[in-house]
Length: 302
Image (tube, rainbow, N blue to C red; front, side, top):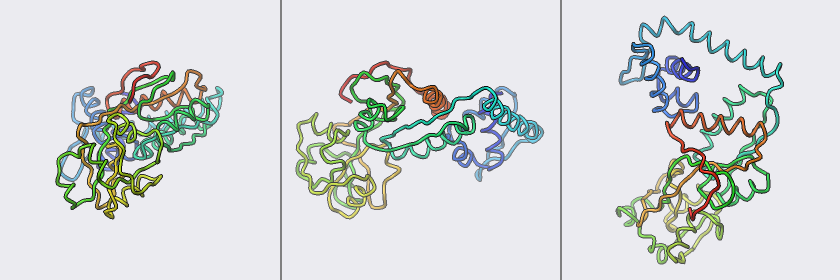
């Protein structure tokens, strides 16, 4: 049995919920379910009994749990002792993300990585993709989670995202299935990061659109609050729709604007940076079941 799968099982048994276990360990509920299903395939019998209120350990799992808990405890102790004896990876890492919704996932990764490498300090900052890439090239970041950008940096695709429209809930626009990109020429537009090389502005540039900008902001939640107040329409990445405030409806654009998101880094990662990057990629793959292989240097509009 793999340790991370055992951790998922024990967390689900302790919390009585796949969602709570996912939150505790930094995975998605589907990722937790998948790992436990894999354990059940290996053992040949059910480990959790699922019901409408959550999950409970099966009788067989109840027998295993004391030994599994001891195994996890021993592993944590061994890793910490080994770190102090063998000159473990130490140092400071700075990472960036252009997706506010990723703060929670990355923070969980930092917490789990810190248990393995207590000598590593990790800082995390947010900004738009091109600004983070600039800091990466200036060696101010070890790596960053961003929308795809051109350059000679190493690019590791992780997921597809979509640039979407933000409209006031209850407005006539909210009843539309899609928002034409040309509508931004006439509707009052609330711009975020004015003049910056962000995905929104790349959409406008691609279609030769000059948006009817009436307000500007540098914060996504402030942008959404202004949309909610009926001051205009906005635009953001669908990945960050979890940040949507009350009174704001997210709609796809017409034509659809699909982009690629992933991790950008340079080839001279520090040992600590390399170790954390590998940890992030393995954790991401276990949680979502996918991440594309390193595509080398980055190129292309998106």
